[in-house]
Length: 193
Image (cartoon, rainbow, N blue to C red; front, top):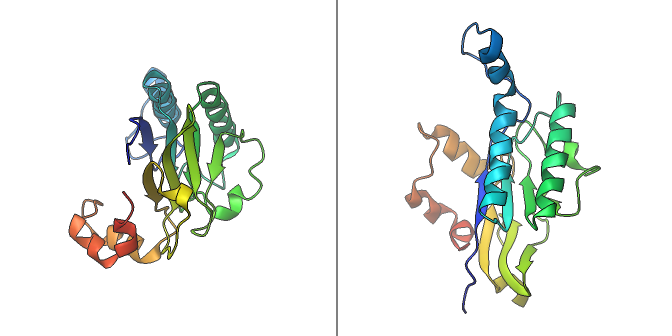
Protein backbone atom coordinates (compact mmCIF):
# COMPACT_ATOMS: atom_id res chain seq x y z
CA UNK A 1 0.00 0.00 0.00
CA UNK A 2 1.38 3.43 -0.95
CA UNK A 3 0.78 6.17 1.59
CA UNK A 4 0.22 9.77 0.56
CA UNK A 5 2.28 12.18 2.68
CA UNK A 6 0.31 14.64 4.80
CA UNK A 7 0.63 16.74 7.93
CA UNK A 8 -1.51 16.95 11.05
CA UNK A 9 -1.34 18.81 14.34
CA UNK A 10 -2.00 17.33 17.77
CA UNK A 11 -2.88 19.35 20.87
CA UNK A 12 -3.97 18.15 24.28
CA UNK A 13 -4.79 19.87 27.54
CA UNK A 14 -5.48 23.13 25.68
CA UNK A 15 -7.80 24.45 28.42
CA UNK A 16 -9.17 27.27 26.32
CA UNK A 17 -9.99 30.52 28.10
CA UNK A 18 -8.42 29.48 31.39
CA UNK A 19 -5.92 31.98 32.80
CA UNK A 20 -2.52 30.85 33.97
CA UNK A 21 -2.28 30.20 37.68
CA UNK A 22 0.52 29.91 40.18
CA UNK A 23 2.56 32.69 38.56
CA UNK A 24 2.22 35.27 41.32
CA UNK A 25 0.90 38.80 41.08
CA UNK A 26 1.09 40.42 37.66
CA UNK A 27 -0.28 43.66 36.26
CA UNK A 28 -0.65 45.57 33.03
CA UNK A 29 0.34 43.81 29.82
CA UNK A 30 1.71 40.79 31.71
CA UNK A 31 -1.68 40.30 33.36
CA UNK A 32 -3.45 40.44 30.00
CA UNK A 33 -1.03 37.84 28.61
CA UNK A 34 -1.56 35.59 31.64
CA UNK A 35 -5.33 35.84 31.24
CA UNK A 36 -5.24 35.17 27.50
CA UNK A 37 -2.30 32.73 27.33
CA UNK A 38 -4.31 29.59 26.52
CA UNK A 39 -6.36 31.42 23.90
CA UNK A 40 -3.26 32.87 22.27
CA UNK A 41 -1.56 29.47 22.30
CA UNK A 42 -4.60 27.82 20.68
CA UNK A 43 -4.66 30.56 18.06
CA UNK A 44 -1.07 29.58 17.21
CA UNK A 45 -2.15 25.93 16.93
CA UNK A 46 -4.73 26.98 14.35
CA UNK A 47 -2.17 29.11 12.52
CA UNK A 48 0.22 26.15 12.40
CA UNK A 49 -2.52 24.00 10.86
CA UNK A 50 -3.11 26.60 8.15
CA UNK A 51 0.55 27.46 7.55
CA UNK A 52 1.55 23.82 7.16
CA UNK A 53 -1.59 22.76 5.25
CA UNK A 54 -2.51 20.22 7.93
CA UNK A 55 -5.13 17.69 6.89
CA UNK A 56 -6.51 17.58 10.43
CA UNK A 57 -6.16 18.73 14.02
CA UNK A 58 -6.42 16.24 16.89
CA UNK A 59 -7.69 17.63 20.20
CA UNK A 60 -7.31 14.90 22.80
CA UNK A 61 -8.93 15.95 26.03
CA UNK A 62 -9.27 18.97 28.28
CA UNK A 63 -9.87 21.29 25.36
CA UNK A 64 -12.04 23.47 27.56
CA UNK A 65 -13.69 23.52 30.97
CA UNK A 66 -17.28 22.25 30.99
CA UNK A 67 -18.24 24.44 33.92
CA UNK A 68 -16.87 27.77 32.67
CA UNK A 69 -16.62 27.06 28.97
CA UNK A 70 -18.99 29.49 27.23
CA UNK A 71 -16.34 31.83 25.80
CA UNK A 72 -14.02 28.86 25.24
CA UNK A 73 -16.75 27.09 23.25
CA UNK A 74 -17.16 30.17 21.04
CA UNK A 75 -13.38 30.36 20.48
CA UNK A 76 -13.33 26.66 19.56
CA UNK A 77 -16.24 27.07 17.14
CA UNK A 78 -14.53 30.03 15.45
CA UNK A 79 -11.25 28.13 15.15
CA UNK A 80 -13.01 25.08 13.65
CA UNK A 81 -14.84 27.31 11.15
CA UNK A 82 -11.54 28.93 10.13
CA UNK A 83 -9.92 25.51 9.71
CA UNK A 84 -12.89 24.37 7.59
CA UNK A 85 -12.09 27.21 5.18
CA UNK A 86 -8.63 25.62 4.78
CA UNK A 87 -9.85 22.02 4.31
CA UNK A 88 -8.61 20.99 7.76
CA UNK A 89 -10.75 18.59 9.77
CA UNK A 90 -10.90 18.62 13.57
CA UNK A 91 -11.18 15.47 15.70
CA UNK A 92 -11.91 15.84 19.39
CA UNK A 93 -12.04 13.39 22.28
CA UNK A 94 -13.31 14.35 25.74
CA UNK A 95 -11.11 14.67 28.78
CA UNK A 96 -11.55 15.22 32.49
CA UNK A 97 -12.41 18.92 32.22
CA UNK A 98 -14.65 18.44 29.15
CA UNK A 99 -16.46 15.10 29.66
CA UNK A 100 -18.54 13.46 26.95
CA UNK A 101 -21.89 14.69 28.30
CA UNK A 102 -20.94 18.33 27.64
CA UNK A 103 -20.33 17.58 23.94
CA UNK A 104 -23.52 15.61 23.32
CA UNK A 105 -25.31 18.36 21.45
CA UNK A 106 -22.36 19.33 19.24
CA UNK A 107 -24.30 22.55 18.55
CA UNK A 108 -22.34 25.30 16.90
CA UNK A 109 -19.46 23.14 15.72
CA UNK A 110 -19.07 23.12 11.94
CA UNK A 111 -19.29 19.94 9.82
CA UNK A 112 -15.48 19.58 9.66
CA UNK A 113 -15.51 18.79 13.39
CA UNK A 114 -15.98 15.24 14.70
CA UNK A 115 -16.35 14.47 18.40
CA UNK A 116 -15.63 10.93 19.56
CA UNK A 117 -17.92 10.68 22.58
CA UNK A 118 -17.25 7.02 23.37
CA UNK A 119 -14.62 4.43 22.51
CA UNK A 120 -17.30 2.75 20.39
CA UNK A 121 -17.64 5.67 17.94
CA UNK A 122 -17.10 4.70 14.34
CA UNK A 123 -13.92 5.31 12.42
CA UNK A 124 -13.56 8.60 10.53
CA UNK A 125 -11.67 8.87 7.26
CA UNK A 126 -9.63 11.86 6.19
CA UNK A 127 -9.66 12.22 2.43
CA UNK A 128 -8.06 14.70 0.06
CA UNK A 129 -8.01 14.59 -3.72
CA UNK A 130 -9.84 11.27 -3.71
CA UNK A 131 -7.20 9.59 -1.53
CA UNK A 132 -7.70 8.34 2.02
CA UNK A 133 -4.88 9.87 4.05
CA UNK A 134 -5.81 8.52 7.45
CA UNK A 135 -8.44 6.70 9.43
CA UNK A 136 -9.04 7.97 12.94
CA UNK A 137 -10.90 6.27 15.75
CA UNK A 138 -11.05 6.34 19.50
CA UNK A 139 -9.02 3.49 20.91
CA UNK A 140 -10.85 0.29 21.75
CA UNK A 141 -10.24 -3.40 21.30
CA UNK A 142 -11.42 -4.01 17.75
CA UNK A 143 -11.84 -7.54 16.50
CA UNK A 144 -12.61 -6.58 12.94
CA UNK A 145 -12.15 -3.69 10.58
CA UNK A 146 -13.68 -2.85 7.25
CA UNK A 147 -11.62 -2.53 4.07
CA UNK A 148 -11.89 1.26 4.12
CA UNK A 149 -10.43 1.40 7.65
CA UNK A 150 -7.16 -0.11 6.44
CA UNK A 151 -6.60 2.68 3.92
CA UNK A 152 -4.10 5.35 4.85
CA UNK A 153 -2.41 5.79 8.21
CA UNK A 154 -4.41 4.46 11.15
CA UNK A 155 -4.57 6.64 14.26
CA UNK A 156 -6.12 5.55 17.55
CA UNK A 157 -7.03 8.27 20.03
CA UNK A 158 -7.00 7.79 23.78
CA UNK A 159 -8.94 10.54 25.54
CA UNK A 160 -8.68 11.54 29.15
CA UNK A 161 -11.57 9.32 30.18
CA UNK A 162 -11.62 6.64 27.48
CA UNK A 163 -9.14 4.06 28.71
CA UNK A 164 -9.02 4.14 32.52
CA UNK A 165 -6.25 1.54 32.96
CA UNK A 166 -3.93 3.37 30.56
CA UNK A 167 -4.76 6.74 32.13
CA UNK A 168 -3.96 5.37 35.60
CA UNK A 169 -0.64 4.09 34.32
CA UNK A 170 0.19 7.46 32.76
CA UNK A 171 -0.74 9.28 35.97
CA UNK A 172 1.72 7.08 37.89
CA UNK A 173 4.57 8.01 35.52
CA UNK A 174 6.54 10.94 36.89
CA UNK A 175 6.96 12.75 33.58
CA UNK A 176 3.55 11.72 32.14
CA UNK A 177 5.16 10.03 29.15
CA UNK A 178 4.28 6.55 27.99
CA UNK A 179 7.17 4.13 27.99
CA UNK A 180 6.92 2.11 24.76
CA UNK A 181 7.34 -1.09 26.82
CA UNK A 182 3.91 -0.49 28.40
CA UNK A 183 2.24 -0.97 25.03
CA UNK A 184 2.75 -4.73 25.39
CA UNK A 185 -0.10 -4.64 27.90
CA UNK A 186 -2.35 -2.98 25.31
CA UNK A 187 -1.86 -5.03 22.12
CA UNK A 188 -4.74 -3.41 20.23
CA UNK A 189 -3.42 0.06 21.02
CA UNK A 190 0.00 -0.91 19.70
CA UNK A 191 -1.74 -2.19 16.55
CA UNK A 192 -2.59 1.30 15.41
CA UNK A 193 0.03 2.54 12.99
